[in-house]
Length: 324
Image (cartoon, rainbow, N blue to C red; front, side, top):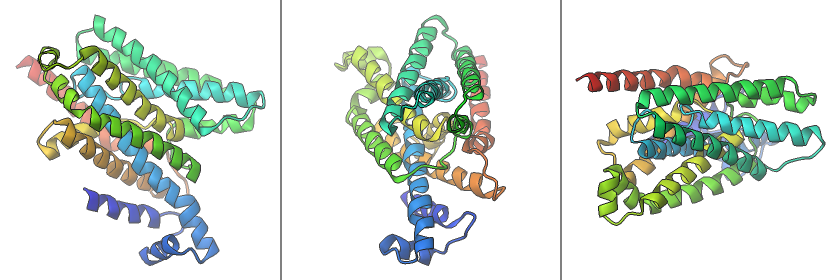
């Protein structure tokens, strides 16, 4: 998977409106000489490719944690409306502050998205106490997502500032416009969150086998549930803050990785989900910016086409199992 990711990295750096050879990429990375070529590779494509790797992996791990929390492979940040709520809060804060002439930092966007993620997560958790059928809970999450997306569209549509109106492209999901600062901030946040996720992999593994088993193994159930909520929210919020909502990566990739790795152990699945999410997101981003070049489509449109069938399969397979 690491070898595939390296290959996808060079493909992502090379394809676009201006095709670049691998030799030019290596030369520009080692010693930028050509100003024009260096600007394309170092200033535009490199941040975008790294962002797709970091944020795609983060989104996949976030989905894996949510699936452990709810005990179901259908759960995910986008499906449960968590990404849409994070998008809503980022849009609201940006409209309010930019409309009053106040500039906001990238870190502030992450905080706003985190607040939105936690709020949606709280609503979903509350619903899960009332709704025991996971399929019905997914429907409730989808409805939450639609409500948040509708409010976001209203906010953006009636905004006066031109820069705020341009948030429409971001609200659909895109790595376009990501710069080095965004990459650095997202990398630090995701790296810390992934490190904590690996650190808690042993109690998370016990939690997978049921609360009673975990409690007998000495796991603090209340604490591990809080850890799962916070880590999944931080990871999904970071993705939404910088790239907007990206659909179905968080729910489909962990399921694919379980089939590939033949295990559900967190110590194996966390790096596998990160690598798998990075590869799939990077491939989808390449398709998004080259399929109809020079017009670029949102990455969510591409991920929906390729990964939504996986989610449909999960729903159908789960229904068949419940009938059996």
